[in-house]
Amino acid sequence: MKDCIFCKIAKKEIPSDIVFENKNLMAILDIMPVNPGHTLVITKKHYKTMIDVPDKLLSEMILVSKKVGKAVMKGLKVKGFNLGVNNGTVAGQKIDHVHFHIITRLAKDGLKLWPQRQGYRATEAEKIIKKIKKVL
Amino acid sequence: MKDCIFCKIAKKEIPSDIVFENKNLMAILDIMPVNPGHTLVITKKHYKTMIDVPDKLLSEMILVSKKVGKAVMKGLKVKGFNLGVNNGTVAGQKIDHVHFHIITRLAKDGLKLWPQRQGYRATEAEKIIKKIKKVL
Image (cartoon, each protein chain N blue to C red):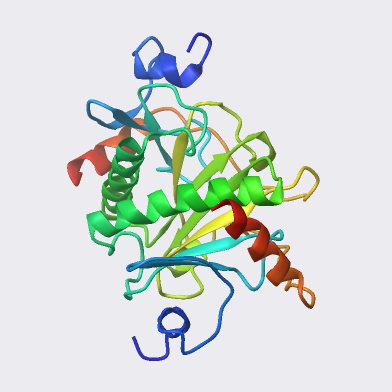
């Protein structure tokens, strides 16, 4: 897609720090990492969110993320990582080309994911399940 | 695994709010949601992180997450969601049984993911890539 930075990276029109590449996917270093080694797995073709990615390719994305996640842990000697996919502007998606974040985590990096969590009131959960199941 | 809450939920020894279920996986409401509709996709068998899940089952997990994510958006009329997988204690994993978070997002929920991001210095990125590629 014209003017999409990840499409340009996939076509090598813009340079990037490539960690892994195959026919359909690329893994590149995020240029603004949460921690060193923060890697993105992107599709070469343009899709907006993971909902738009065909099933076969989406499966490949998670398997490449597993492979890269494992290598990042081993190569950088870190003990864990977050996989994160932001789907939609409301979810913090900044570039409208699907990308899987592999975020290396360090013992004292101070990152607090999702601080605001609270339980459901009375029959709220029941009502929510009904709404989801109706369209599943 | 004995004393694992998600194993007990998978075996229906502990009740849960089930959104979806098939032979290998379950999707349940998180009891401490970031936002209403926050759903977890769990394996019925016990695996610690996504690195430990066999490829075929991991593919199924991401496809079920896509299906559930789509239904959550449609059913609850939300415009996006975060997929999140915390792999390892250092990454904030609280229950040592792999689970994919599907976090519904609302326009003014105030959630700020990964606020502390900064660029690489000089040749830092190059060194990191070498370390990862060596074990990939």
